[in-house]
Length: 262
Image (cartoon, rainbow, N blue to C red; front, side, top):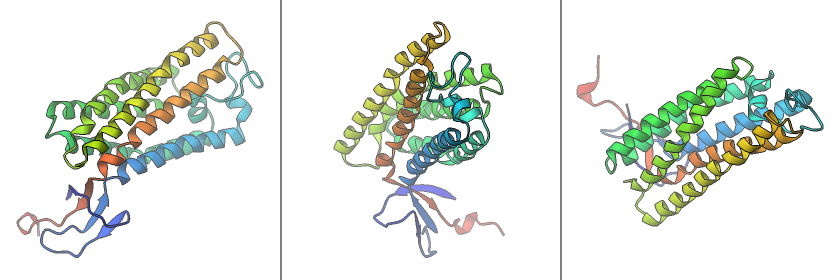
């Protein structure tokens, strides 16, 4: 069985204990959950960008109106979904983010349910739906079905607003981190990253309109930079959970004698 317990000062990812009454077989520090999510998500996007840049540069920077040199940096969609093997590199690595991402939602509920039960429940379900829509635009590429890809992407961005706002409101309600100053500082960081995320959306839309409607050369490259900025801010926002999650452990415990089956 698994359980969340207070963090101790032992070093390392895994910490082994002698089997004893009530003792844990293994513990994993809670801070590794957002850390692994950050590493896998960053590696997925960066890996796809490097592979695409090396193997299909001129193809992934080309759009329906212009190509290189007018357009010289690829969009996120072109990078992760248009070409093999970049698409496969991305999808394999992004799949590895699923376990820590789901554990993020569970741990946030554990941390905040006692102090703010309704907000904790809302945060969990919004986060779960947001994760589902993420799978939609990740595994249904623009080349597979452009409409489904765009609908899932837009849904993901719309759910990001309540997700970030709920997390900002509840993140300082953690019962395991005792420093109010630490929680307040991390809350301020979340507000900054949230502002950067939503602040990048209006210019991104502006340059997309310049590309799609006015057909301005180079507009899609500028749009792509803002699109990549959203990815960076999104990953950065969840990485901040390392501060609160260091107060939790994910433990593997032996079953109690009366719960064991022959």
